Length: 100
Image (cartoon, rainbow, N blue to C red; front, top):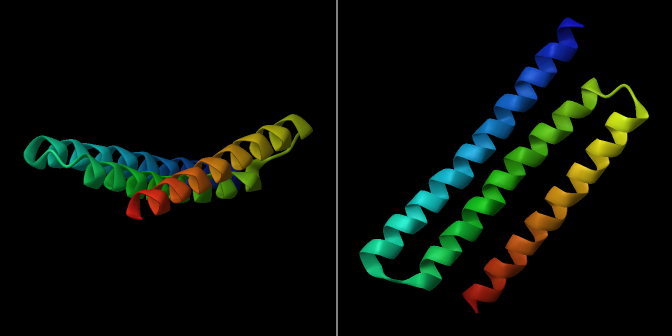
């Protein structure tokens, strides 16, 4: 029980860091957009932040697998995991497209 709670806390902390990364990059992009008016650079910054933040959030989701006990929890994990992978690939594609 103690280790399950510890891993859940660790996973939540990792996911929180991912959320902070996304918010930080979005705020930086907003500041850059206001200062320079360069939409392309701001979009690249948001894409970079989303990719970095989703990597952390994906890692947090993986740590949560230690605490999975029921089939419903496993199914929910698989859905969240797949969604985050798709989002990360989408942002990576968008970043590559913007850099051309």
